[in-house]
Image (tube, rainbow over all chains, first blue to last red; front, side, top):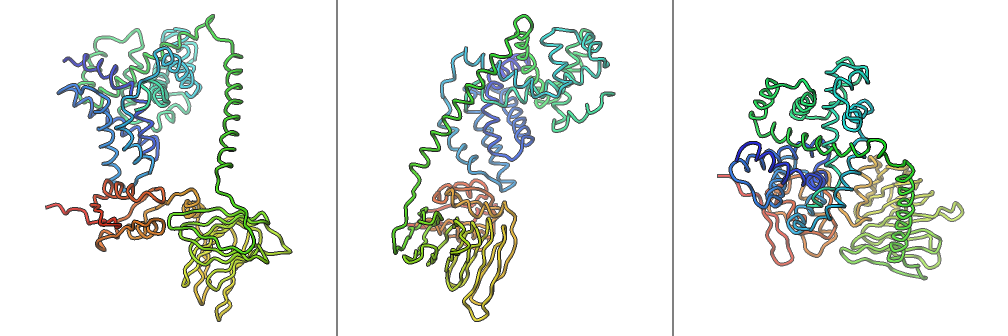
Length: 177
Length: 329
């Protein structure tokens, strides 16, 4: 399997589980930053495992990985919340819930995207609107916003992170874990 | 970067995401070339961490293409979503009201008749509504007596209770417990005691604690005060409101521990459950835990202690025994 095959697999099979993963992680740890850190660790482990052999099905593997990382962290910090423990138990059971139908998912995604856009800081939002909605080039955006190309790039980069975090933060793609 | 405040927007983003997003942003330019691509490829090849971060941001950014649907003239009428959200708000309000009614209907209220003793078993909890509008909430394994001649005189015989008093200056509400009197001056307070030690926690208003002991010790409490009354003294300390609400979590059927030792955790659980937690050795008893548990879920405690602290749990008859964690060889 080539790198790009693996990448496509990751985007197709793993990323859609992010909303559910984050919902779970948020209940286990105290702040958003910690949840994001664990999310990243989960992805790295899943990706590295996939380099050797694609986990199939993905969901139980992702769940087991998240669960292990959370338990490691609880051990380290001796902190636990009742929600986390309850979820650790529920995760196995609730695993193969049928997702909402495709159409609903599409609408949900669109709403999430709009809400994600609203949560960006004003200049970031402006840059994204000019790029994605008005379809301008980076140079045109630079002229329109009256800032350098590098600064446009920087706003877009910040927006990309904001969109990804926000987009995947609300329950959407893939349903609950 | 010349834009004010731009750097601050990165706060909270980890370094890998910052780097990946910068690559991705530059990739949006028409002057992105093979050298740039080679840089990106090399960076991605460095670690799976780089790869997953890039894949994730790339995916989100691609999905944001749907925003093109907002391009005029396809732009939606701004009134439509507003009307919808108003409808949703109305529906939600209706639901909340309905849910409130259900809770009210099932809550275990009872109007106190004349001379009565109220008690709860181990693990029990009960709310007693008094005829004067005051309310007494009994925690586990608790006994109170309510005087027939004066409903504003309650005696705590055993255990713990939370009082919400309808204040009446002409007729003070008095709780008697183990030789101490707590006189309400417009109050919500909790009383927990044994014959040797009474603890009064004041949540709202004011109350006075008077001891019958030889010293006639007395103290007036204001919110946040915890009075500890023994046979001879009354001492008062102030506690932060977070601690107070943790202490009163039993009213929601929960126990909250904030770095409590297993010995303390076991003692608390044992107040509520017939199955008793026993800690096998002093070293294990000193391990600390944070967490929030349903008062009756001893098994959950066992699983958490095992997962978090590594201690072993065995069941012996009605005892749940906590054994030291296996020592590494």
